[in-house]
Amino acid sequence: QVQLVESGGGLVKPGGSLRLSCVASGPDFTLDGAAIGWFRQAPGKEREGVACITNSDDNKYYADSVKGRFAVSRDNAKHMVHLEMNNLKPEDTAVYYCAADRNSHGFNWLNYRYWGQGTQVTVSS
Image (cartoon, rainbow, N blue to C red; front, side, top):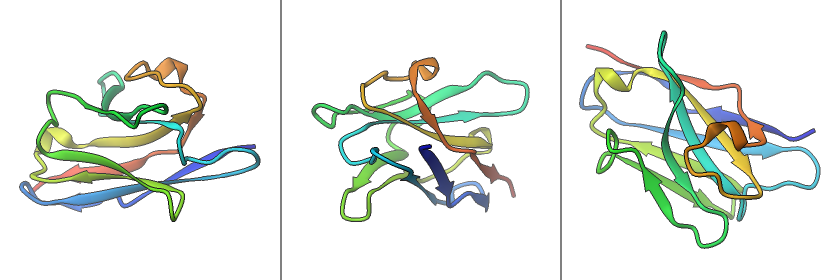
């Protein structure tokens, strides 16, 4: 069974930075070349996409709310993906999830097959 594991969350002050990482374990699946989505969900709010990478051409897309502050990347040597988050704001506080699939789904989270358990990001002074 394929499992994704996120790491790197924590408490940070406004203006600070964090880097989230995601790795996959299980048979017959690797994050290398997979479509990747990073999503977040704050209490009382719907899940929203923040960044994604397509499987076919590695195009990257970002939500308007994080554009210019967040960057998604692959580390194929370590079979990982990262979400670099800079200039964090209190409104970025949420549980962040990594999702993956063999096909690209953009920010349509319902169609991603594999999910991590989430990692908490709290931005507060």
